[in-house]
Image (cartoon, one colour):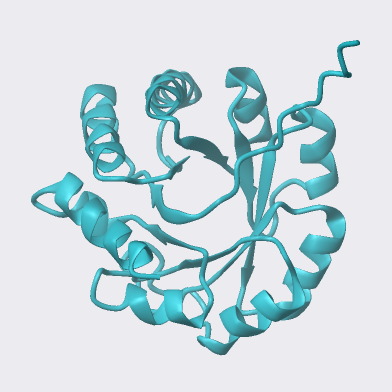
Amino acid sequence: MVGAIQASAPPSIAGLYALTPDRCDTDSMTDFVGAALEGGAATIQYRNKTAAPELRLRQARALHDLCAAHGAIFIINDDIDLASAIDADGVHLGRGDATIALARARLRATALIGASCYDSLELAEAAVAAGADYIAFGSFFPSNTKPDAVRAGLSLLTTAKTRWSVPVVAIGGITPDNAELLIEAGADAVAVISALFDAADVAAAARSFVALFNKR
């Protein structure tokens, strides 16, 4: 007798979590992301705040296919409609974005939903209670992307890991030189933009981050 088919469990967020820079050239975008994937990035989040909707759709589709070819997780920043349209692996929500409940209702059952919790354990508690699959804290270091972002302390990561079983992501000004502090404090993943995509060799920069996780 054949048993019931079980739905596959969603993948878990871990390792290098790359956030795309704002680039209008889709070919350039896919080249940079492809290099990050070659270097070992496990998750790509599409984050383009300036592109028109048509360009965002085109870029998201291209990156979705690229991630699928590399076996990487593909997350859309903020936009549930876009995540649904391309059947992304999930969506990441910040303060002021749609609710986790709405994302859960709109996206497929195995979609990953992440939540920005900034420097707040209270926000993290609410996010986990609402069904977030992972939580993100930061900014841990000065960031050119969000220079006015609230600063978070390393103890947030350690406390979060003792309270909840969901993956914990660190973000904000992270480089290969400071990422190890975050990993030692409990970060399951580090979210990186500038130190990865501004590097002369994106694949080599990705490998330097991945090596820190391999030391565990």
